[in-house]
Image 1 (cartoon, rainbow, N blue to C red):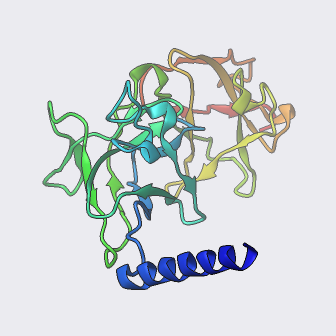
Image 2: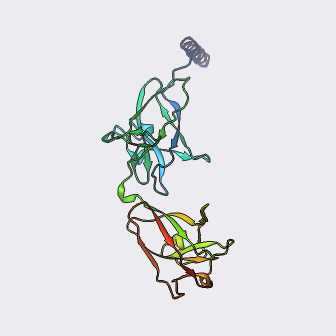
Image 3: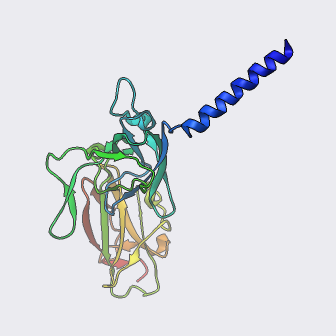
Length: 261
C-alpha cells in the first residue's frame, strides 16, 4: 500500500513538472511600476504637505465606493534628497490605469496647465484636474510626471511677504540687521532670531510666510540686541510697525535712526 502511494505521488509530481515546462512561467498578474514625481519651481504647496498618486487600481487607492481612487488611500510617495517624490505601485501589465498626482495634507489634485509667452505656466481656465494614464510594459521607463500646479484650497495658502528695509547711511557695514516681532518666526520678540540678508543695493531683506489674516507687530534691530533698536528720527521711542497679512506682496520699510547712533 505504501509503495503504491509513492508511485501515485511520483506520477503526479512528474505530471506537474511536465505541465510547468510545457506552459512556461505564468504571466504575472501585477508588476511593480515605479513613479518619480517632480514638483515644478513656484508650485504652491503648504509646509508639511506630501505627495501621492491616486488612481483606478487598488494599489492607487481605488475602492468599491470610489473606483477612481480615494486620496485617503493614495500611494504615498517619499521625498528624495534631490527634491523629487518616489514610490512604486503594483499594477496589471498591458492594462491602462488612470491616475492623478495629488498633494496630500491638505488634499489637492494636480491641475491642467499651459505655458505662457514668458516661459511661465498657469492653470488652464476650466481645464480641471490633470488625469494621466499608464499602460505598463516591460521595456518602459518609470512614470515621471512633472507637476506645475495643484488645486490648493485658498484657506490653507499662507501669504508670503518680501520684506525690504533701507537703513541709515551711518549703519556699520559689518552689523547684522534683524527683525523681531509678534510671530514665532520673529521670536516672538527675540531680537537675535530672524536675521536679514544684505542685498546688492545696500538694503536688507527676508521672505516670510504667515497665516492668512495675521496681524503682525515688529521692529528692526541691529546685532541681535535691543540696545541697537530702531528709533524715530528725533531719537524718541518708535512705535511697533504693524502689518495685516492678506496676500503675497513686497513690503518696503525705512529705518530713520538707531538707538546708539
